[in-house]
Length: 428
Image 1 (cartoon, one colour):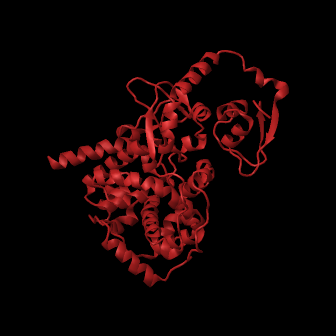
Image 2 (cartoon, one colour; image 1 turned 30 degrees about the vertical axis):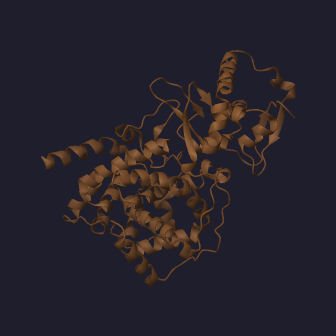
Image 3 (tube, one colour; image 1 turned 135 degrees about the horizontal axis):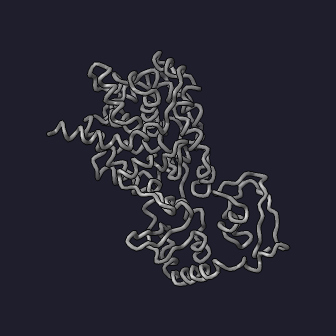
């Protein structure tokens, strides 16, 4: 019966994982050849985690995160490289204090040194984002008996960007594909993508990792299966002659998975030994425990909340990444809620009637011509400057972010220095 149960679980997971395994696939003969030789060049490393480099560190949300997490520089200059002897000693300590089999090898050393050399400037703000997300992760990892170290997996997957999207459509902090997300009750509709909901996606990731551990009985293999699917890990075990240690089956795994697990270990190492490398987090202006949620009674936009309460749109976007259009829908039975800074909730509740009155007024205007202040003779052409973002420009001219996006046919909040925007100001 136990065998049948495990077989059924593998089949269940495989339905969605067929797509999940493709999310970061790399077909590169040179990369595979270098891996078999036990060597990775800097170019190879960039290919292994190209999602991290291209989609995450340079993502629009990350580039605009200075509002939420200020500053980019560490307090002291990071140490770029470490001796092999010191690294071996530290990895042995990590191995003794975690359920993972963290063993020194030249590949892992190369990854760690590459991250320290080329990415040290990213870690202060990444560590600051971790100040917000990690307590949330740890709560649910502990609840599902998943090792707390798995919180670092979200860094490898998305660099803690809840709106991250891979080139094949995986989304969120934990990079769920659509079908896998559906299997773990992460629903997607026109307004909401629950793969981008930090709490719901974390719970789904905990369940997913628990299912993978139940199949393999090993957290290293569960980690590998998270990336490539349980089918590929099972085939690697068979091709290795039955070995069940990750390092023994590594050469039989897909190339991207062979690099994925060392990337996880390298991230774990750097966060654990951040002080030794002169790395320190920037200070986020908000922590997860300093937030609260309030259910909406009508469909309301971030712009409307900002106009009535003064809570900046960028903060609402940071705290509510699951709402795709910056609109919180009211749907009976769904109980959609807005997450707010805790110190702003009283003001929100005091002005709730005013907010819904604004919603009603805006809905009444929906089918009418544009307001008079949108006279074409009053429009201006604004040139985007360094440090500008839509919320700042909207506040300057007394308009809403959604209006600027509509006037300029913008699909997202990304701006480029020198870009020209058409604005119909309410005030000059």
